[in-house]
Length: 121
Image 1 (cartoon, rainbow, N blue to C red):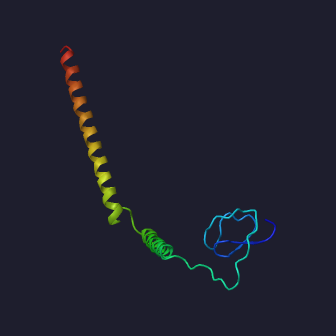
Image 2 (tube, rainbow, N blue to C red; image 1 turned 60 degrees about the vertical axis):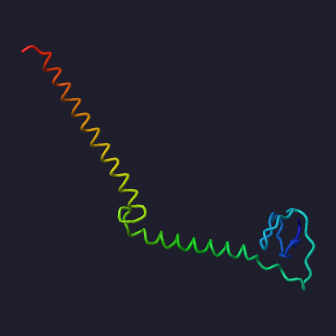
C-alpha cells in the first residue's frame, strides 16, 4: 500500500501495512488501498455487546487496580482471601514436619534399643 486506504466496513483511514481496521477491527488485505466511504455515510456505532464487554473489562480492571494498590501495605497473612489459603498450606507443612520429626525420633529410639540389646554387658 503506497498511500492511506480506507476500511470497506466503516470508512476509517488505514495506514500502509495495517492488517486490521483500527475503527471496527475488520480484517484488511494490508496491501491494497480501499475505496473511501462517502462523507455523508457515518461510521457504524459500536454494538451494544462490544460496549458491554468494554464496560465489563473496565470494571474488572478497576477492581484489579484497587486490589493491587491495597495489597502493597498488607501482608499475605492478613489478606482474607489469600491469607486463609496460605495459613492452611503453612499448617499442613507444619503437621508434616512434626510427623517427620516424630517418626525420626521413634526410629532412632528403636534403633538405639536394638543396638543396646546386641551389645554384651
